[in-house]
Amino acid sequence: MATLAETTLTDSLIASGSEVLTDEVSLDFYAHDIYGRGADLAAVVRPSDKHQLAAAVKAATDAGHPVAPRGGGMSYTGGYTQDTPGAVLFDLAQMNRVIEVDDINMTVTVEAGCTWAALRERLAHHGLITPMWGTLSGLKATIGGGMSQNGIFWGTTRHGSAVQSCTALEVVLADGTLLSTGKKHTRPYGPDLTGLFLGDTGALGIKATVTLKLIHEADFHGYASFAFDDAAGWFAASSEIERRGIATECFGFDPYLNAIRMKRDSLTSDAKQLVGMMKKQAKVGGGVLNALKEGAKVVAAGRDFLKDANFSLHVLAEGRIQAAADADISIAREIVTMHGGREVENTIPKIIRANPFGPLNSILGPDGERWAPIHGLVSHSRSAECFAAFDALFAKHAEEMDRLGVHYGTLIAAVGGAGMVIEPCLYWPDASNPVIDDTIEKPHLKKLTKHKHNEDAWALTQSLKKAIVQIFFEHDAAHFQIGRTYKYRESLEPRADALLKAAKAELDPRGLMNPGSLGL
Image 1: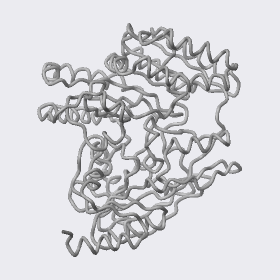
Image 2 (image 1 turned 90 degrees about the vertical axis):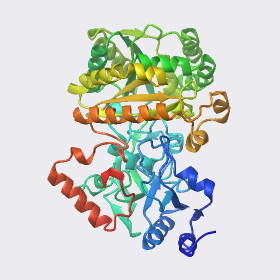
Image 3 (image 1 turned 60 degrees about the vertical axis):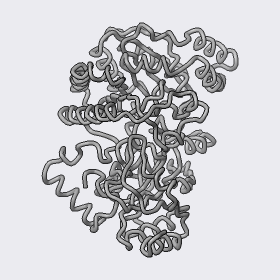
Image 4 (image 1 turned 135 degrees about the horizontal axis):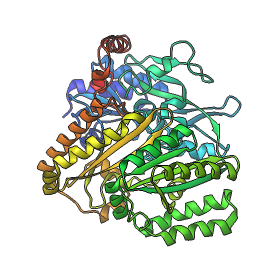
């Protein structure tokens, strides 16, 4: 039976016009992210617009409850899960409209709950795209989440991370104030007030609307994949490709992640994705005949084209004419050859580019294992040595990892003007959770092994995760999805930390906006 205080809070939240959830199943679901479960929630609010959002935030904080934003729920760093009970979580999924596509000033304004996939579909009608146009989880990941957490993938090697595409925000502060930052057509204007709220993991405010820059979508594409026998050449080639500015995406997998991908992906599932790739080729690359030829190449390559590759690298280029995209791929080939790599069939970049926001089935391993990525953005000059430190860590714990069924694989990606993302992904046998089960396609989920909770494997995974975070810290890495995981404040100089705390005190004097995030 609800207490008087709980009833009063619920009534106040409902008065904002928002949908309010207080049932046990919903509260348990929203207390989870991909990695773990936070403290119990008091309520979940689902506003339909920025005014409902502002009114409900004010109602919650007036009653003394902490508040936190949730986008697509794809966080694995405690971005919205809480350390103490009683918070009100704001699910922005219903704030999903594209408000304005301004093809004169080349900006688009969206509500924060709009997904990257939905925005791309809308912009395709205009032949436009944002410079960084989505994460691999963009089927569910929201643009508001991308501004709070930052992120990379599509367009990243040329245009940088998600927040670099943003020009202006509307943000709801802890007291319910709706604050506008910046000018929609330019950023910054004076001190970068928009930037203050970017990458804050919701510690300073809840994004209501987001304005992003637009560019014309490229008409022609080039693809190439390469294999390396050692990590040194792999990193050197990736870094040089980024520095030369010839790729829109440049990413790769170490031998262990290659093996996981080969185990996970069947030719049948690739064949389904092949339809999208062939349509793309038919549209821009020479018609139906060329599409059929490209499709035949993928089928002929099967799943064995990387069987002898220790390290794989995948490069995508774009141009206004095909010759321009091809020229950039030719430069990539020269760079790879110089660093000891060799070309292999370009199946992976073709398929994922044609299907950029596929089902999120990879948040469990191919045998139903749990999955936890831990990443860092490392300078080009330190990326290889940082990767070597991870090799040493896993070698040290190899016997225990093997005994408990814990394994790993690593992704790398070049980020325009910023260095290399290195992302070791841990896999371990353990029970799933409600967010994972809700995210994965049901037919796929049914095929996976169901594990019981494995306390020993979970403990080892948590220990390895902390060690990985420490290695990143020692190599001066930056991070996306800072949440409650990475050592952000420890990396700040004292005066910078004081400035951050002063901003938090001004914007959230009672400490009720996503407390604990950013270490605040």
